[in-house]
Length: 167
Image: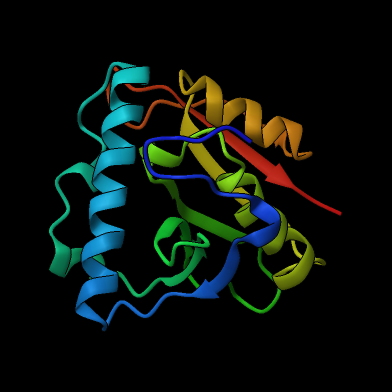
């Protein structure tokens, strides 16, 4: 894989680990990555009202999500995903999947999703939404076997795509 401004992340050498947002440094890094990644998505989908763009650090920490990170060989968080704990028989609904823009196109999102699908929730449907105009995310979900459902518009000017992965 090619070098990027943030360094090289070889997915085989990245570690997947839970992220503890009670740690101030971890929370600040996750917040920064999320805001930077969602700013890129906002440009792609021509919609700057993505809620996470205006979410404070305290609000993010208070969401009650489970956080999982991909940690690069240099020790830095390269990306993360988060979800609410699912009901015993319900699907897992991913709340967010973000990669540090300095590490785009290095396999970080694929690594995180594959871990969730194969290791954490292999027998459970996984649902996710993204901006319908976010071509990199749409392509990623389709490549990993997610099925696209109906698009929807939660607010005027925003079209979202929904995806489900089942075994």
